[in-house]
Image 1 (cartoon, rainbow, N blue to C red):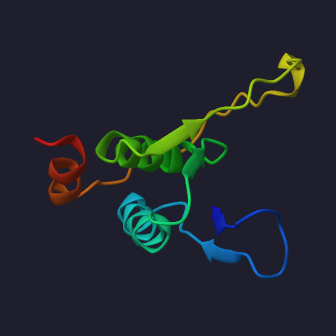
Image 2 (image 1 turned 180 degrees about the vertical axis):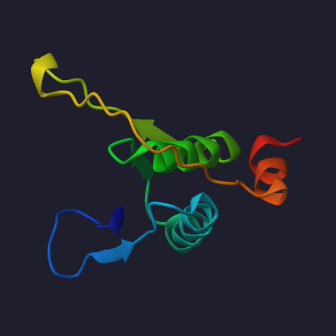
Image 3 (image 1 turned 180 degrees about the horizontal axis):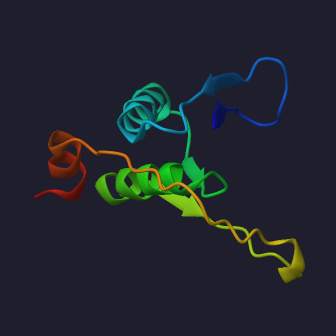
Length: 106
């Protein structure tokens, strides 16, 4: 996953962040850092274009901070034949109890 920040357009002054696709907790930490840096000057929008783990992190983050918005693209066409039919290994990740408590207000 790559996160970026920009003011009015995309150029070489944008901040780019590479985030792990396997560690939800590190994604939450980086999103928190980005928010703290930009909250006074920018609107924060998260697009759910990443994998399932990034989507979980983004949803937890947006649940905690009501100033963060989620945006979702709506495809104009679907191509079912291009979908994968994966059968194989299953991966799991652990979201720390601290992060669950913090983001879900448990």
